[in-house]
Each structure stands twice: as structure tokens, then as C-alpha cells.
Image 1 (spheres, rainbow, N blue to C red):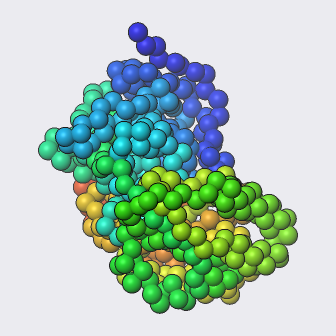
Image 2 (cartoon, rainbow, N blue to C red):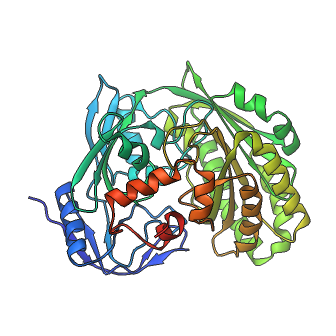
Image 3 (cartoon, one colour):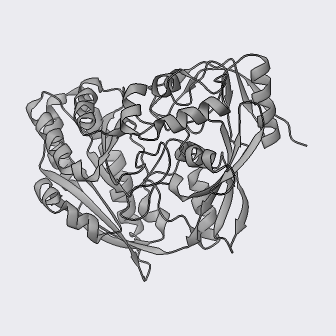
Length: 439
């Protein structure tokens, strides 16, 4: 027999520390039935209800002053179907645990983002993605969903069962219900060869179309105040496995990318005038390297330096102009930006509110060290992104509202109509959803 854990509410904070919430109560259900009962109870008490993952969103997508559902007991793999090549996993499972469990079974997701701390439902609901010429976001790899809706009923959906809900709920921002399980498409585990190397900013832009076309996964980081980038190409490999040697791995991924980077950001925060010099040094610190390993060890890396982030998806053909405008804006401003700008791509997908819905996309992410004022930089960047009809990542800082989304998402009305049907009383509403989807 399982028991629901109902905690006294304290203050909930997200990973970056820029969002806080004070729910009336917290519930940690151990089964889907208990979660459904908590939703029905919230309705009886006339309280709003939200599920929260690991708090890796920079928006208040999961914040609530009502009932906060913590899914950490709803974890683990429910089923592996080797014939259909799918895996069904409980919604509170961290991506890290899923990746490790799949690897043990000789399986892997096709593509993933660059961190794996999030829960599977938090990552997919906000549209988390990596980079890919042909393979799309984590949500695009979903083949089935289980959802607790506002009346406490449990809905299963796929391309053939409740297809209208499936089309929207894969990136549902928590507005349609609480996801309790996800079925992902998987494939036999494979090897990727990563080639990381510095490249001048202008060269990357000039050759971007070829770099994108020739590599299964291409991404790069541009260091503001410099003309330098670090590029990364990941392509499937016949092997043999050749991981980064442990000492190198520690030095480059932990010491340089996290330890020294943390100190550099502290220095930059204390003395902003030093940032351009630090950026020049940082952009040259990581040397070229090539290694071959299983997917999650190539796609993901540790991120211990805390930051605040904004990311927009622009049409892929608008990327080069967007980046030139961003660089010109930083160069002529008094801004001092210590974090690199991350650039990735995704093919078009068919998910109603996916940032790549119906269009091939390029993602431009800007970051600021946690605790540093970010508004001026993000406001100027957002102005550039929106001029290109950019769509903000649902879990990252932005100021867009319903009117804007209705313009940049052709199927926006389809999503809001579905929400009216599934949650007419707005049980899953919060301030963030009110702004982005309307009341």
C-alpha cells in the first residue's frame, strides 16, 4: 500500500533562484491514482494545482499559490517494448536516470538536450531540445502520454488515441493536465564522434549552411566581446569507443567549464570592466578535441555555474542576420556579457506549441551569471529575436504574451480551444499561463 505524502508548504524556488512560490500545500503522490485524487481534492477546495519537476525552468511555468505536486515518487521505467522500440517511463524520472537505465538495456534516445537534470515531463512539457539536422526535440520523440486532467480522470493519448490531445500535450506547458507517464521511441544504442574546435565567428556564419548540412548535430558557442566561437559537430560513428580521457575530461569539463568559469564570473561580476578580457581568455581556453562515446555522454555535460537564460527559436534562414544584429548590439552597447551565446538547430515538427512547430528552426540562447542584472541585455536581445518572429523557449525568460503567440504560432487557437475543453475552470492556471495563453 502506498501513501500520499502531504507536506506543509514552504517556499519553493527554482534552480536559478529567480522564481519563488508559496503553495498552500505540497503533495508527493506515490501512484497515478493518488495524483488524480489530489487534483480532485484541489477542485473541492477551489485551489489551483501545478506539478513541479527539478525547477530548471527560468519562467514561473510551475509556480503556484495552490497545491504543488512533487513527482519524485513517480519514477522509473514502466515498460520496455523491444518490438515497437519504445520505453514507457513515469513522469518524475530524471533524464539522467532514464539515460543510464536505457544504456544498461542497450538502448538510447535519438537526440537530447545538453543537460539531463530535468524530469522527463518537465523537459518535454517546456520543449527542451538539443541540436539536430534531422532529429528533433525530446518531445518529438514521444509516442504516447498519460495525462491526469482537471476532473481527475486519466487520459491516454497517442497518434491513434485522443490524437488531438497528443498533438498538443507533448509540449503542454502544464496547461492541459499533469503528465504521469511518457512513452518514448528508442533505438539500439549507438556511438557518436564529437569534434570540438575553435572557429572565427565570421567563418562560422559564412559556412553555417554547409556546417548544418554536413553534420547530424552541429552547434556552437560565440563569446561576446570577441570574434571567437567554439564549434561542436556530433556524427554517428562505427567506433571504436574513444572517450575523453578521465583527467582531460575533469580538466576541461569540470575545471575549465565549471570551476575556472565560476571564478571568472565572480571576477566579472565584481569588476565588469574585466569581462571582455576574460571573454578573450575563455574563448581560447578550450582546445580542439575529438572523442567517441555513447550518446548521453556526448550530448550532455555538467552545468554547475548557475545562470539565468533567454532562448528564442528563429526560422533557420534568419539565423545569420539574427546573430550579426546581436553582435552589433553588444559591440555598441555598454553591456558586459561573461557567458557565451549558444546556437543550435532543429528540424520542423508537428507539435502544436513546439518552438519548431511547422518550421525549421535555429535557437539562440543568451545567458547571464546568476545575480548579475540581466534585464538590459535580455530586453535588447528579445527585440532582435522578435523582429525575426522568434518563439521563446517556454521554460526560459521572455516577456511575450498571448497576442504575440497568436501571431507566431499558426495553431495557437487549436491549443487554447483544447485547453478550454480539458480545463474549463483553469485548475492548472497560474500567472505565467495567464500571460502566455490568456485567461
